[in-house]
Amino acid sequence: MACDAASSGADGGDGAASCAFAVHFRGELYTRVRYADFTVRDELGSSRPTPCDDTGEGPSSDTAGTETYATYRIEELDAGMAVAVRDEPDESGRRDRLSLYVLQRDGGIPAEAKKFLDSKR
Image 1 (spheres, one colour):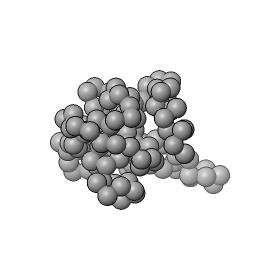
Image 2: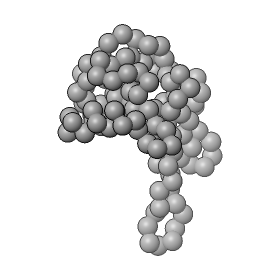
Image 3: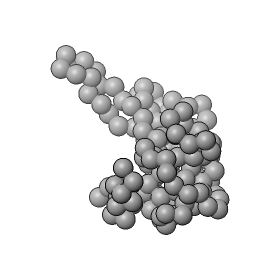
Image 4: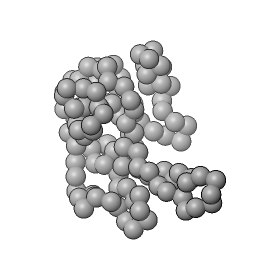
């Protein structure tokens, strides 16, 4: 899981960190998007969650760096843009407990993946 710093408000208190779901797959960073309508194909291997340091005291999981998730091809997009990951989030919205993860680069998500996501909303 990747972490993003978040401001605590106007009182000037310490900032808090929150973790976004992200995985590394084939050397690239993919982040989970809220979208449940995709078709799962063959298993591609495994992905590894990114460590999360939401307390400033190191990764919050005792299994950081060792946990892996089954990762699958989806029919609608090339695996170089998006994959399905069995990370079992409570809010996945799918019976198979798979979530859609989209490649993240400096400029955001690939244009084809954005077009796919926008067309399904």
